Amino acid sequence: MEKSKNKTGYQAPALEKGLDILEYLSGEREGRTLSEIAHALGRNQSELYRMMACLEDRDYIAKDEGGGFRITLRLFELGHRQHTATMLRKAAHVPMEALAEEIGQSCHLSFQHGASLIVMMERMPARRVCLSVGEGATLPMSRTASGKVLLSRMAEEAADQLLEDDPEFSRLAKAAQKQIRADIEQGRANGFLFGKSELTEGVADIAIPVGVDGSGTAAVLAVSYLDSVKDAAQKQRNYLKATLICAGEINRNLGVFG
Image (cartoon, rainbow, N blue to C red; front, side):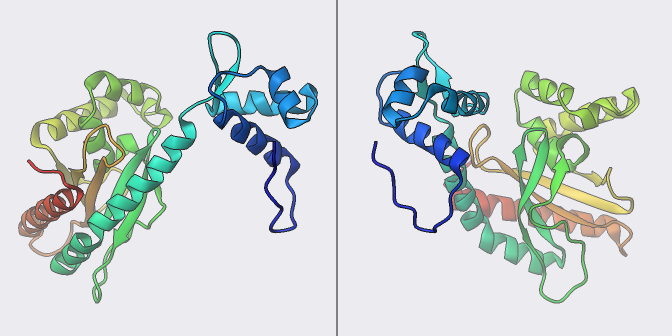
């Protein structure tokens, strides 16, 4: 098997072994045994054993019915995730900037990662003091309005399983767990959520889904703001209306209608 040239001058032998395995299997139509892979790469089986086990644990390779190893769609998934993240950012960029300027509050876009949320994008108004969540922030699904909205868009069995597997949820008292489930049901009924933040006192959240459920474009648009502001009830109505309009624009940019 021909190896690519070393462009940087640096070497990472363990990583190179893993990449060699993946590159070899990507060109094979049928599963290959450890012995066949080692022979093709010019290495000993003992050199590759741990790396093969690691790649199998991380779902990059899998055994077929005959006991041979084949490459999975994991790499395709990662590439597709990056593509859809780029699509989301492009679709949301202008509408979110307009929303932030209109309401004078920051807004952010989040997606699911396991039992957590990751903030992939945030937009701030130009000349006002406001709350900032921060791009790259990781938040618990079960304790945030955005997370509950995503859970409300899942099949009930899938949402229940995610909650059961979530240590953040498991540590809560039964009454708190019951309230979270009620919030999820409210999100399922209304199509969005708004209310006081569980994580930060004095803060309110508005969360509205965008994209297509069950796809790489499923995300949540949210606004977090101080709920002690003057005319808070009226501002909440204004913020909700503007955020719903923004979510609709993002969906249209994604080609999602209705």
